[in-house]
Image (cartoon, rainbow, N blue to C red; front, side):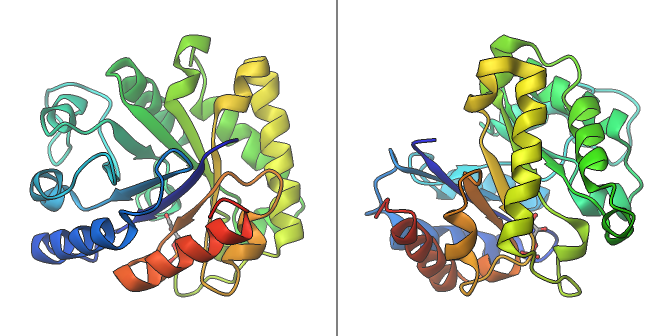
Length: 259
Ligand code: 13P
Protein backbone atom coordinates (compact mmCIF):
# COMPACT_ATOMS: atom_id res chain seq x y z
CA UNK A 1 0.00 0.00 0.00
CA UNK A 2 1.42 3.42 -0.98
CA UNK A 3 -0.07 5.23 1.96
CA UNK A 4 0.50 4.73 5.67
CA UNK A 5 -2.35 5.33 8.07
CA UNK A 6 -2.00 6.81 11.54
CA UNK A 7 -5.11 7.08 13.65
CA UNK A 8 -6.08 7.79 17.19
CA UNK A 9 -9.21 6.90 19.05
CA UNK A 10 -9.62 9.48 21.82
CA UNK A 11 -12.05 7.17 23.69
CA UNK A 12 -13.81 9.03 26.56
CA UNK A 13 -10.97 11.27 27.69
CA UNK A 14 -10.98 14.74 26.17
CA UNK A 15 -13.43 17.61 26.71
CA UNK A 16 -14.40 19.83 23.77
CA UNK A 17 -11.68 22.35 24.65
CA UNK A 18 -9.04 19.65 25.09
CA UNK A 19 -10.02 18.03 21.80
CA UNK A 20 -9.78 21.28 19.86
CA UNK A 21 -6.42 22.11 21.46
CA UNK A 22 -5.09 18.65 20.65
CA UNK A 23 -6.27 18.75 17.05
CA UNK A 24 -4.97 22.26 16.47
CA UNK A 25 -1.56 21.20 17.76
CA UNK A 26 -1.57 18.00 15.70
CA UNK A 27 -2.42 19.93 12.56
CA UNK A 28 0.36 22.47 13.12
CA UNK A 29 2.95 19.84 14.07
CA UNK A 30 2.28 17.52 11.14
CA UNK A 31 1.41 20.03 8.40
CA UNK A 32 4.72 19.56 6.60
CA UNK A 33 4.21 15.79 6.19
CA UNK A 34 3.12 15.03 2.64
CA UNK A 35 -0.42 13.68 2.83
CA UNK A 36 -0.04 11.73 -0.39
CA UNK A 37 2.09 9.30 1.65
CA UNK A 38 0.07 9.23 4.85
CA UNK A 39 -3.37 9.78 6.30
CA UNK A 40 -3.88 11.06 9.81
CA UNK A 41 -7.30 10.42 11.30
CA UNK A 42 -8.65 11.13 14.75
CA UNK A 43 -11.87 10.04 16.41
CA UNK A 44 -13.03 12.42 19.17
CA UNK A 45 -16.01 12.03 21.49
CA UNK A 46 -19.43 12.87 20.04
CA UNK A 47 -19.73 16.10 22.05
CA UNK A 48 -16.51 17.44 20.52
CA UNK A 49 -17.20 16.51 16.90
CA UNK A 50 -18.90 19.75 15.87
CA UNK A 51 -16.18 22.00 17.30
CA UNK A 52 -13.51 19.61 16.01
CA UNK A 53 -14.91 19.72 12.48
CA UNK A 54 -14.78 23.54 12.56
CA UNK A 55 -11.26 23.59 13.99
CA UNK A 56 -9.34 21.36 11.59
CA UNK A 57 -8.58 21.37 7.92
CA UNK A 58 -9.70 17.99 6.53
CA UNK A 59 -6.74 18.07 4.15
CA UNK A 60 -4.54 17.41 7.19
CA UNK A 61 -6.70 15.55 9.67
CA UNK A 62 -9.63 13.32 8.83
CA UNK A 63 -12.16 13.25 11.63
CA UNK A 64 -14.44 10.38 12.44
CA UNK A 65 -16.85 9.10 15.05
CA UNK A 66 -16.19 6.32 17.53
CA UNK A 67 -19.57 4.70 17.05
CA UNK A 68 -22.90 5.07 15.25
CA UNK A 69 -26.38 3.60 15.13
CA UNK A 70 -27.27 1.88 11.85
CA UNK A 71 -30.67 3.58 11.61
CA UNK A 72 -31.22 7.07 10.22
CA UNK A 73 -33.70 8.05 12.91
CA UNK A 74 -36.19 6.53 15.30
CA UNK A 75 -36.72 5.27 18.79
CA UNK A 76 -33.05 4.67 19.62
CA UNK A 77 -32.48 6.67 22.79
CA UNK A 78 -28.88 7.68 23.33
CA UNK A 79 -27.77 6.82 19.81
CA UNK A 80 -26.32 8.95 17.00
CA UNK A 81 -27.33 8.34 13.38
CA UNK A 82 -25.36 8.40 10.12
CA UNK A 83 -27.36 11.46 9.04
CA UNK A 84 -26.26 13.30 12.18
CA UNK A 85 -22.62 12.53 11.45
CA UNK A 86 -22.98 13.47 7.81
CA UNK A 87 -24.55 16.75 8.92
CA UNK A 88 -21.20 17.60 10.54
CA UNK A 89 -19.38 16.71 7.33
CA UNK A 90 -17.94 13.47 8.72
CA UNK A 91 -17.24 10.51 6.48
CA UNK A 92 -15.47 8.07 8.78
CA UNK A 93 -16.90 5.93 11.56
CA UNK A 94 -15.55 3.11 13.68
CA UNK A 95 -17.49 -0.08 14.38
CA UNK A 96 -16.66 -2.90 16.74
CA UNK A 97 -14.03 -1.41 19.01
CA UNK A 98 -13.16 -3.95 21.67
CA UNK A 99 -14.64 -1.74 24.38
CA UNK A 100 -17.95 -1.63 22.48
CA UNK A 101 -17.90 -5.40 22.12
CA UNK A 102 -16.68 -6.32 25.59
CA UNK A 103 -17.92 -3.52 27.86
CA UNK A 104 -21.21 -2.82 26.06
CA UNK A 105 -21.87 -6.30 24.70
CA UNK A 106 -22.14 -5.46 21.01
CA UNK A 107 -22.29 -8.41 18.64
CA UNK A 108 -20.76 -9.12 15.23
CA UNK A 109 -24.24 -8.78 13.72
CA UNK A 110 -24.60 -5.28 15.15
CA UNK A 111 -21.16 -4.29 13.86
CA UNK A 112 -22.24 -5.57 10.45
CA UNK A 113 -25.33 -3.34 10.47
CA UNK A 114 -23.16 -0.35 11.34
CA UNK A 115 -20.66 -1.13 8.59
CA UNK A 116 -23.40 -1.53 5.97
CA UNK A 117 -25.15 1.62 7.13
CA UNK A 118 -21.89 3.60 7.05
CA UNK A 119 -21.02 2.59 3.49
CA UNK A 120 -24.55 3.12 2.26
CA UNK A 121 -24.32 6.68 3.62
CA UNK A 122 -21.09 7.29 1.74
CA UNK A 123 -18.88 6.91 4.79
CA UNK A 124 -15.76 4.84 5.41
CA UNK A 125 -16.22 2.16 8.04
CA UNK A 126 -13.29 1.24 10.28
CA UNK A 127 -14.07 -2.25 11.54
CA UNK A 128 -12.10 -3.28 14.62
CA UNK A 129 -11.47 -6.92 15.27
CA UNK A 130 -9.39 -8.80 17.81
CA UNK A 131 -9.25 -11.93 19.91
CA UNK A 132 -9.37 -12.05 23.71
CA UNK A 133 -6.61 -13.51 25.87
CA UNK A 134 -8.80 -16.58 26.31
CA UNK A 135 -9.25 -17.04 22.56
CA UNK A 136 -5.48 -16.83 22.21
CA UNK A 137 -4.92 -19.36 25.00
CA UNK A 138 -7.21 -21.86 23.27
CA UNK A 139 -5.51 -21.16 19.92
CA UNK A 140 -8.67 -19.92 18.22
CA UNK A 141 -7.42 -16.41 17.37
CA UNK A 142 -7.57 -17.06 13.64
CA UNK A 143 -11.10 -18.44 13.83
CA UNK A 144 -12.23 -15.45 15.91
CA UNK A 145 -10.73 -12.93 13.49
CA UNK A 146 -12.28 -14.73 10.52
CA UNK A 147 -15.67 -14.79 12.18
CA UNK A 148 -15.49 -11.09 13.03
CA UNK A 149 -14.46 -10.25 9.47
CA UNK A 150 -16.94 -12.53 7.74
CA UNK A 151 -19.91 -11.34 9.78
CA UNK A 152 -18.75 -7.74 10.19
CA UNK A 153 -18.25 -7.30 6.43
CA UNK A 154 -21.14 -9.51 5.31
CA UNK A 155 -22.98 -7.97 2.37
CA UNK A 156 -20.32 -5.37 1.55
CA UNK A 157 -20.29 -5.24 -2.24
CA UNK A 158 -17.17 -4.86 -4.40
CA UNK A 159 -18.01 -1.22 -5.21
CA UNK A 160 -17.89 -0.37 -1.51
CA UNK A 161 -14.63 -2.12 -0.68
CA UNK A 162 -12.76 1.18 -0.95
CA UNK A 163 -14.88 2.42 1.96
CA UNK A 164 -13.65 -0.29 4.32
CA UNK A 165 -10.68 -0.32 6.61
CA UNK A 166 -9.82 -2.80 9.32
CA UNK A 167 -7.99 -2.41 12.61
CA UNK A 168 -6.59 -5.50 14.27
CA UNK A 169 -6.56 -4.84 17.99
CA UNK A 170 -6.02 -7.89 20.19
CA UNK A 171 -8.19 -7.32 23.26
CA UNK A 172 -5.37 -8.38 25.59
CA UNK A 173 -3.06 -5.72 24.17
CA UNK A 174 -5.37 -2.72 24.57
CA UNK A 175 -5.30 -0.11 27.31
CA UNK A 176 -3.59 0.27 30.69
CA UNK A 177 -3.86 -3.46 31.43
CA UNK A 178 -2.67 -4.42 27.96
CA UNK A 179 0.61 -5.99 26.94
CA UNK A 180 2.11 -5.08 23.57
CA UNK A 181 1.87 -7.86 20.99
CA UNK A 182 5.08 -9.31 19.57
CA UNK A 183 5.68 -8.17 15.99
CA UNK A 184 5.96 -11.77 14.74
CA UNK A 185 2.52 -12.56 16.20
CA UNK A 186 1.05 -9.39 14.70
CA UNK A 187 2.38 -10.33 11.27
CA UNK A 188 0.90 -13.82 11.55
CA UNK A 189 -2.54 -12.43 12.40
CA UNK A 190 -2.35 -9.72 9.75
CA UNK A 191 -1.45 -12.33 7.15
CA UNK A 192 -4.52 -14.34 8.22
CA UNK A 193 -6.68 -11.22 7.96
CA UNK A 194 -5.29 -10.57 4.49
CA UNK A 195 -6.11 -14.13 3.40
CA UNK A 196 -9.65 -13.82 4.71
CA UNK A 197 -10.17 -10.45 2.99
CA UNK A 198 -8.93 -11.98 -0.27
CA UNK A 199 -11.43 -14.81 0.08
CA UNK A 200 -14.18 -12.24 0.60
CA UNK A 201 -13.22 -9.62 -1.97
CA UNK A 202 -10.62 -11.12 -4.30
CA UNK A 203 -8.14 -8.64 -5.72
CA UNK A 204 -10.09 -5.72 -4.26
CA UNK A 205 -8.89 -6.85 -0.82
CA UNK A 206 -5.63 -5.08 -1.58
CA UNK A 207 -7.49 -1.77 -1.29
CA UNK A 208 -8.41 -2.34 2.34
CA UNK A 209 -5.91 -0.81 4.75
CA UNK A 210 -5.31 -3.04 7.76
CA UNK A 211 -4.00 -1.23 10.81
CA UNK A 212 -2.55 -2.56 14.01
CA UNK A 213 -3.64 -1.20 17.40
CA UNK A 214 -3.06 -2.09 21.04
CA UNK A 215 -0.32 -0.59 23.25
CA UNK A 216 1.42 1.01 20.29
CA UNK A 217 4.14 3.25 21.74
CA UNK A 218 7.37 4.97 20.64
CA UNK A 219 9.34 1.84 21.53
CA UNK A 220 7.41 -0.60 19.31
CA UNK A 221 6.01 1.67 16.56
CA UNK A 222 8.94 1.09 14.22
CA UNK A 223 8.94 -2.69 14.48
CA UNK A 224 5.15 -2.77 13.91
CA UNK A 225 4.89 -0.38 10.97
CA UNK A 226 7.67 -2.16 9.08
CA UNK A 227 5.79 -5.48 9.12
CA UNK A 228 4.83 -6.43 5.55
CA UNK A 229 1.07 -6.68 6.21
CA UNK A 230 0.67 -3.65 8.48
CA UNK A 231 -0.63 -0.55 6.67
CA UNK A 232 -0.88 1.72 9.65
CA UNK A 233 -1.00 2.19 13.40
CA UNK A 234 -4.06 2.85 15.48
CA UNK A 235 -2.96 4.45 18.70
CA UNK A 236 -4.63 5.16 22.04
CA UNK A 237 -2.68 6.39 25.06
CA UNK A 238 0.60 7.12 23.27
CA UNK A 239 -1.19 9.52 20.90
CA UNK A 240 -3.13 11.74 23.25
CA UNK A 241 -0.33 14.21 23.74
CA UNK A 242 0.27 15.97 20.42
CA UNK A 243 4.09 16.19 20.55
CA UNK A 244 4.33 12.49 21.37
CA UNK A 245 2.00 11.43 18.57
CA UNK A 246 3.82 13.65 16.10
CA UNK A 247 7.16 12.07 17.05
CA UNK A 248 5.73 8.56 16.89
CA UNK A 249 4.36 9.22 13.38
CA UNK A 250 7.65 10.66 12.14
CA UNK A 251 9.67 7.81 13.62
CA UNK A 252 7.35 5.25 12.05
CA UNK A 253 7.37 6.95 8.66
CA UNK A 254 11.12 7.10 8.67
CA UNK A 255 11.40 3.43 9.63
CA UNK A 256 8.99 2.56 6.79
CA UNK A 257 11.10 4.57 4.35
CA UNK A 258 8.36 7.16 3.76
CA UNK A 259 9.92 10.19 5.40
P1 13P B 1 -4.00 1.81 23.56
O1 13P B 1 -3.03 2.29 22.50
O2 13P B 1 -4.13 2.79 24.69
O3 13P B 1 -3.68 0.42 24.02
O4 13P B 1 -5.46 1.77 22.89
C1 13P B 1 -5.59 1.26 21.59
C2 13P B 1 -6.99 1.40 21.14
O5 13P B 1 -7.91 0.92 21.76
C3 13P B 1 -7.23 2.15 19.90
O6 13P B 1 -8.55 1.98 19.49
